[in-house]
Image 1 (cartoon, one colour):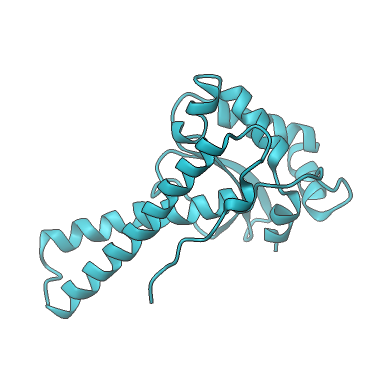
Image 2 (cartoon, one colour):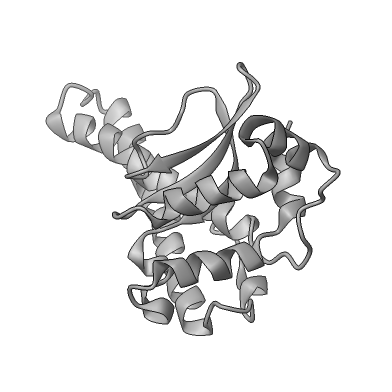
Length: 192
């Protein structure tokens, strides 16, 4: 069974995101889906052929995390965009943010500051289901720094491809546009 790239063209017209930027981003995402399928197919063939001791098998296993997480993080990112309403101040997510960070505003300050850090990667609000906490994480590479057992609630792409063509080096302006585009209902639905 292969993965199929999802259609996110509904995001075309999102204020702060040009059609060119979004279409390029969708194409990049489609590449992650295609490469995830390709790597999985190659690994399955090598397993059937008894080539699991080959260095190529090991390298493909390592590559799988990059391609798969590149696919999945983009899906989370696109799916938590396109909203037009503010976070429900009386909802469960806002209450957890306030309990963890002191207020929703302090959570947002922390999330924005994480996104504004130098470097490329992702910013993710994770829910640690074991500890019950909400934590903003920096993810440097797709396949590194995901907290085990935590559920991603909000994902922001801070690789250059997500903003450079529209904002140049003004990452803070991109973050501002991103916050205006968050689909808080989708984020809240991820909180279990």
